[in-house]
Image (cartoon, rainbow, N blue to C red; front, side):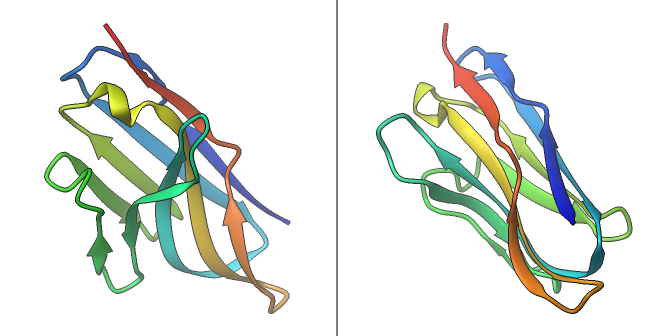
Length: 120
């Protein structure tokens, strides 16, 4: 069994910063890509940031220059530093990992989500 657990969400004023963390644990052999997605009420889930094992990083234009993704492969963790937050960044943020289990299965795992609210 594999678990992804996010932390670090909360309420912040516009222009503020938050740092999200995600820890992967369980029956993991290897983690490939890790990323963050978000889903606002009434909208589809969208990519926020993604990093491959080799360190290739992808951001959509909506967060480029404001958000920074990083990962610690030794600890099976991924982070999202969010600066200059805007009200439109309000959403539930989900951690995602493409990985291979010790049993040999390749799965796409999701965390339970953490709420980020940007409001004055």
